[in-house]
Structure formats: C-alpha cells, structure tokens
Length: 206
Image 1 (cartoon, rainbow, N blue to C red):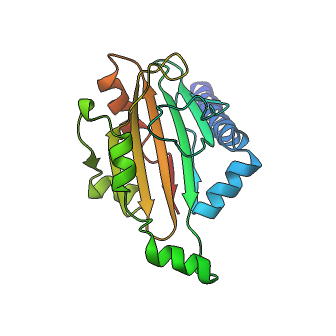
Image 2 (image 1 turned 45 degrees about the vertical axis):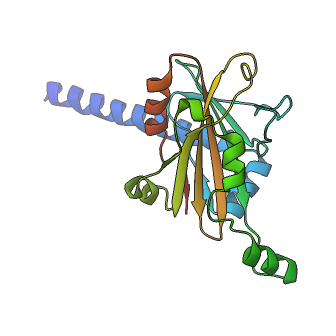
C-alpha cells in the first residue's frame, strides 16, 4: 500500500510539473505579443505560437536595408534560436475589405494573391537556387492557399552577422500575406531548412 501511495504521489507531482510548464509556456507566448502585433494578427486572420527553443528580440529595423535593390515590409516580430542563432523575422499584410470604390479598384486591378514577378526578380538570389512552391500538404497545415520559398539577396552581412536569408511567403486569398525571413550564417544551409520544418505552423491562418 505504501509503495502504491508513493507511486501515486509521484504521478501527481509529474502531472503538476507538466501542467505548470504548459501554462508557463502559454503565458510566455502571449506575453511576447505587443498590442500592435495582436491587432495585426487579428486583421490578418492569423494565430501565432512561439516555437520551441526560440526567444523573442526587438525586431530589427529596415535601415540599413537587407539589400539596396529592394525594401522589405516592416518586421513586426523577431525571434532567435538559442542554439544555432538563426534569426526569424515576421511581417504581415492584411488586404482591404470590399468597402468603398478605392478598395474595390485595388482588389480588381492588383493581384495580391500571388507573388509579384517584379518583386521576385529584385529580391531573389539566383546564385543560391530557384524559387520553390510550397507543397499542398504543408500549405494545408497553414490553412493557406499558396506559398513560395527562396533565398533573397543580402548585402554583406545583415546586422553584421547574417550573410544568408531564406524568405517564406504565404498567401491566403483575399485575406492577407505573410513574409517569414530566416537569417543564417555560412555553412548553415541544412540547419536552416531543418528549422523551417521544425517551426512550420507557428504562424497559420484561422
């Protein structure tokens, strides 16, 4: 009986520790979202979860730019991996609703649901490969319609640290576009692809 009681107490203790961890992790995920980020997530119909082994940083600004050939959307969220120091930045753009003549004109004349060929030509680093389409199974996990992955140009080392960057663009038709940038160092090509896989679904449409 005494042995059974000890096992029961240990089980309760383990369950308590697990519950505490889950609650603390949930609180941390919510705490790192500013009011502005929460607003933008709501406008874009998105939900965000802090990926494992990453900590939040103040998003870097756009000056100096990543490369003089283009200007990125403002970064709203910044994350860094504890171990390999890969940095993730996130931007999101919600699309205008069908209210008013101007919005109706923009929706009718601008293809907001596909990647811009002009923007792609300015950004892609063709030395490191071609653009690839995200497969249907992975797109389904994000509740999105399409996605693109490619390396963008980096002038020198961004922030004096990162000479390489992979860009993931995710589109939800007539709702929003998300841009997730993965900054990494020389020799981390395989590692960054693993991190993209591990963090898949941290940001998805509702």
